[in-house]
Image 1 (cartoon, rainbow, N blue to C red):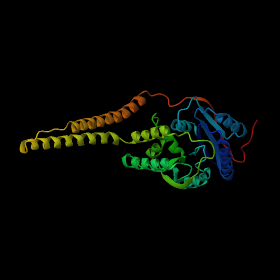
Image 2 (cartoon, helix red, strand yellow; image 1 turned 90 degrees about the horizontal axis):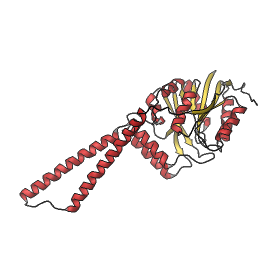
Image 3 (cartoon, rainbow, N blue to C red; image 1 turned 135 degrees about the horizontal axis):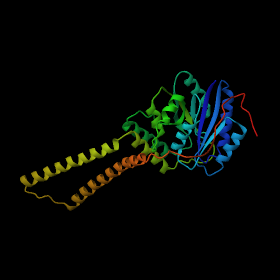
Image 4 (cartoon, rainbow, N blue to C red; image 1 turned 90 degrees about the vertical axis):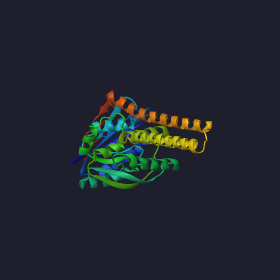
Length: 321
């Protein structure tokens, strides 16, 4: 029987976990031709998330967990999960149930047809503000235009990955991670599934706008040097503009006898050029900072404790203790 690992990164999800676990058990019981394991990655939760995972593990030996030593962020939690996942395929799923686990059935069907990366694409986003929806749409439009690889828009982390995809992702050890882009970078045969995204079943989102902006910057700088090129283009454009202004003043003084004047315009031009320089230095600093972080070659994460899930046939899974 083929082994399927369901990987769930978690951070302060004590309210949502019981709902998630019940739905996963129901789906696993329906798919009796597969052997399932449930791997939770606790990303330094400060609530009862780890205690709840412990209770799942005591009842069901299919449940395993990796408890990280602190909160590293979802991107690092995912690579920690990939490092510990085992099975012929891994399904990456958020704990908040905005992505319906029932799609796992369809994902497995496409996987059996030969697709190696079956990802879910949102056609609607319930429970989110209009600004978040609009900003997300514009961000993906910009990212698609400047990225060196094709990154589908409105696509999250909910997907089935064949074992060969997991092995490829495990080789990418960069610390400034944008996993949505890495899924596309490794390639393999992909299939899209459309779905309507639900609101959170419980709890509150952990993604504030500061974290979202940081993730957006990581996505742009990880897969494109377009911002640096735009800075160079802006600098070249200012040079051309300055040359045209010098020619204009030259011909004006020669043929019309007028001398250049206007302190306000000069100050404006100086401030504009200074702003362009500061923005360019800031963009350059973003890239240099990422180079600096990568040269440290630090481990991506540390594990405080872990328990591996045991993969049984669904009719063999049993309670203990």
